[in-house]
Length: 330
Image 1: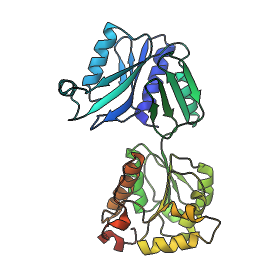
Image 2: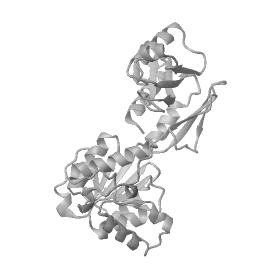
Image 3: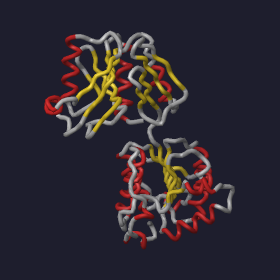
Image 4: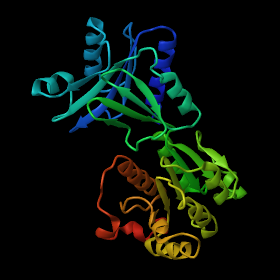
C-alpha cells in the first residue's frame, strides 16, 4: 500500500494505544483536480499533532480548528470545494471538490488488527458504519481504494504494489529506479552471474532463481507487475508462461512489435488459453517513440500509472508507429 498511508496507520495505532484521542480522515470522493487521491489518510491527535495529508495544507488547518472546537462523537461526512469561496479559501484547484469521512477512533476500531494484517503481507478491507460507528474487517477486498455509499465506508489496505523484473540489464536498472520512486517493492530475477555481478540499485531485491521459480515464489496477485526485460526468450518466456496464468495486474515484455507477435505465437504452444495470451502487454509501455533505456522505462511506468489510476489512453495500435518501434527494446 501507499507508504504514506502505512505511516498514518502506524502512528494512529500508536497514539490510540497510548490513550491519545485520534480522529482519522479518509478521502472518499474527489471531483476535478483534487490534491490527494481517494483513499488518502490523515490522522489528527487530540493535542493537534497530525500525520498524513488530504490536501496541500489548508484543509488540514480547517480540520484542526474544527477538532479543537468539538471532536465528533461518531463518524461523519464532510465536503470541501462546494462553493467558489471554499475553493479559494482552501486552495483547491479550479473545479476541485473533496469529500472526507472523519472517524473518531473508539474502542473496537480494529485499526491495530488492520495494521497487523498489512504487516503480515495480507490484504484486508475495513468497513465503518457511519450511523452506528461499528467496524468490521472483511476478507473480500475491493479493487478500489475506498467504496463509500453515504453510510458505509469500506477501505482497502494491503501490501504495496510489487514488481518482478526479469533480467538485470541497463533497462531494468532504470525501470527499478523509477518503480522504487513510485513506491513499488521491486525484485530482480537474474540467474546469469555476469549480469548479476554488476547490478547495483539500492532498495531493489535480487534473486538468482530461474524466472518461472521466481514467479511461483512471488505468488502474484492483483497488485503485482511482472516484466520480461532480457530479450532472451529462454528467460522471459519462462516467466511469462507462469505469470499469465495468475491474476497479476500487469504482465509485459520488451521487444519490437514483430518480436512481440512471435512471442505470442510461442506462448500459444504451451498450456495457455487465447485469453491468457491476450493479457500480455507487448511491446510493453506507452508508444512514446522511446529509444534510450530511460525513455523506455518512462514509457513502462507511465503505462502502469495510467492503468492503476483507471485512465484510458489511446491504444498503440490506433496511433501512428513511433520511431521507437524500430528499436529492439520496443
